[in-house]
Length: 199
Length: 274
Image (cartoon, rainbow over all chains, first blue to last red):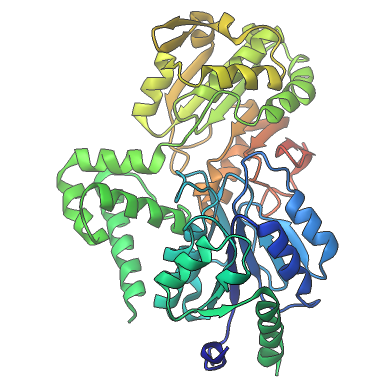
């Protein structure tokens, strides 16, 4: 965790990209977030178009934080975990609210992790923390690189601990400076971030 | 100044050039998705930076037309979100049935698939002869396609499935003729819809509507523009009129949230209070 310890910049937004194996990974990560977590958490999880919002409902029941699917133009609030609705890209706008888009798929995906990460990097610059978790494709690598290029922080799930390792491996290849952690280390880091920024 | 801030200036100048040259104002489009679309056009035009588009767009109308297509072409299909249409049949059609004559505005109709979808359902409910349907868009090319009522037959099986799921009573094929790989809607449906140019960004009130449908248009606008257009919709709706938005769009974060009742949260169907 040496790389992250050096970071002195205040984090204002956490974006997470996850694909195959994501239900399990989010179940283990989001449910660990403390009550009154002081950052917005924005998640793109690849899933089928006619998914009925079960993921958000499930996580909401099991977590201390409020977990919800995003509505267009919804303001971004600290302590809430937002999930991209199926079949829409999710973007962050300058006024710190969300916008959705039905534009073409990116990396065969809608929502696409790259689309969210690119707009998050653009808006939050060095105050953005991007996390890539388990998955079978390469979506998110480019976006994670853009977060780092803007001065933000990158974490990738240790591929050996991931249900599907291709997405974390692709992200590490593209962003070699990313911190590589397993899920419980990521949860610990996010909790420590909370304490550090409060003190 | 950071490079990213300079890039913002470039885009502002590009949009200003387009506004003054062609009278299209994109300055209140949702910026993040607008930027993605501009980048998409840059790749197609083999350019690197937004400022390089400025002389091309100023002096070559064809480049502007491609810009407009890049920005305005939305993927639309027959009976997208069938549960929205079935909700429409259940909760709005019975109210429309109480009027001797009523008006519907389909704003941002793109190439017209949803307008025809709606006309078919009105026909089956015995309401089409009392309906005046206006379907508008700001892209004239899209309106031309909509006016012709000719579509690829490629997705017709899916359309038929969604038509039945939406509450269609017959076979969808009753409403069009098929030629090779294309379908053409019947004249009765085509005559029931008036396709017209209307730009939500700058054009005014559109008559006394009983129902306004505007789905997946607001997602491309910023908050300010969305509120301006909602004001326009409010002024264009009769007392107790209906407003339908895309399923992930909501009045909740808008200036109209207290002026309309929510009939369906899931399908974003609203009714004006008075």
